[in-house]
Image (tube, rainbow, N blue to C red; front, side):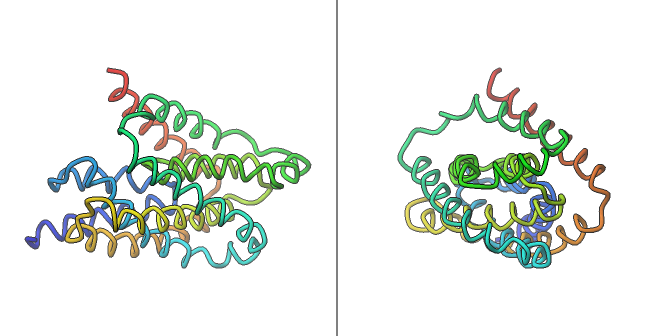
Length: 247
């Protein structure tokens, strides 16, 4: 691998890790970077997922203060996220690609709008924070294991509506669970999918750096402004994917 190629993926990883830990949009940066580096769509997808394990590690590392108060909730939802990620990865390996192509832009667009809606009351939060929360978490995790573009935005929208917690806390829980999704899917892809390790290594290094910084920004940024930025970025990705899917 040439030095410019290595630096290109390292920089893309830093940008993707930061964007992912803040807004759940890591693949918006990293996936096109892998395509531009010459990888096929399938190889780019699985290589991106393997490298994203380090984004999850970095963002979880940076989110420790927010996660310390959510240990009980994390222990309940972590197995759900892991099983969903495994199911999605198996779907990618065993089924023809493109089944979810038309549904994904709509899902991302609705989630982006959902982030801007006011949070529910505390009573609603307690109701949705129970066993029912496992259903949307499992579905988002399955999508994350299958393809994953903006899956973090969707999960953040779920938590914004269901949990009576500040945005940094919801974002921290999102980072932890999506890290587990990518870990489970990435382990599977290591054995059965065409991972390009030479490209995964610099991307992963960049992810770790960028994702570590992201939670610090979320902790200090104005929540309303951050919600608007996340929603606009998610909506832009939804439009981009929708044009590609429906043209």
